[in-house]
Image 1 (tube, rainbow, N blue to C red):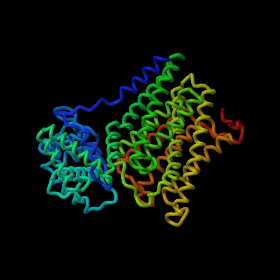
Image 2: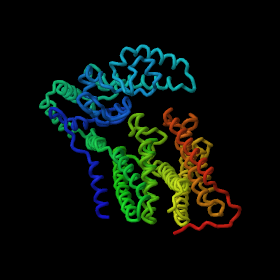
Image 3: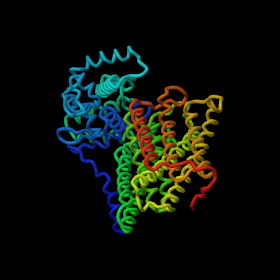
Image 4: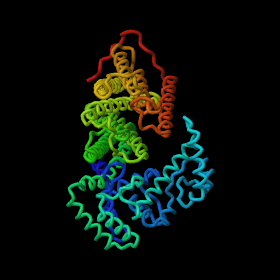
Length: 547
């Protein structure tokens, strides 16, 4: 057992990043920590570089001929060596029809350089003019891909403009500007760019040290917060947490095979790695709160991060009470899935964005929004536990007897109770907030209706189970159906484009939402066809949760 714990801890330590090594001895970490003004907030240069590369390329590192480039070096090359940067395969183009239309090489590559796109820029501009003139309510995949590429090209050009000293630092069209907005700060910035271009490490580091010393004397520059955000970017806690959740999930699967001693060892390893992942997840969540100065949930991205955290926290508590591996396996699956969702939501840009006026209330963000997302987290944990029951029944696991079914069913019941409590609390608090903001408690807004449906569905599940109408199969199926309903409330209402809560919708989100719902419905149909379940009539076997 001790060897298992030691191996799990070593696996966690292996994820600690090694110190970055840069060519020519330049302190690029220090340069990445310099404050710039972008999208209404002061942030490190590193954040602008990472967000920009993520939007353009779909990832935060870039493969080049001489190895992998970080986001800071890519942006510095774009600013100082545009002829080199234009040759990088950085523009992500997934749509094969668009690649053919632009006359790009017919390869398996999905990323192309600016040099490859230059001959087709005018053709793409004509297509964009046609799409905007049509103003169709629903765009084809080709039109959406063309618009996305046009936006990425525009961002690329705006970034290049930041290297032009003739452009004032407060230009509204610039992607970012130097902060503070003073000639001395701008002079230091352009001096460092020239030193980077000339590969003069001594001059680069000297100017950087002088600039950092000057910034420390400025009370209007939040230098500590900016540096902390740059450190947060380099550690990448959610990416590392995602890897740990995946490792815990694989160990959890192994814990259901083999002999009793093997299962106990794998279960202990799964729980250890899961706890490590949760600590990393918690650290990242706390860091975001400190950087933004807000509660944990402020936008769609942070909701995905927090939903996963809440589900894992509840599952760790459950696993401590009933250490059979089911809760740990469910938690690792939900944690990994929600961080994957958050990663794809980050493709839209800065995730620590400025708050909208109607949301600018830390009190309601700490109460209504947190309560609602805690309900989401509990619901998806119940969904994951329901999947374990369904898969074990479909696979005909002989070790999964009536006693195990009852124990798992009791966990699902308890988590659904938790989901009902927080969903109801969050819905009521949201009504009070709406009354203060818009003068009405309830307006049948799509998001309000979605929240109400979650409350009603959870109440139906609990009443049906307590009344003896649902057996273990019925409870698992009902929980999975509740996950479909919750996903529609979380993301689906954004597709309607109406109401006071319509935000964060993208075509990609809709595609993955439909795929998730279709997969869940197919799984339920298969389960009902193979195993089936019947609603019990009356109160024949009244359900009593196990302790």
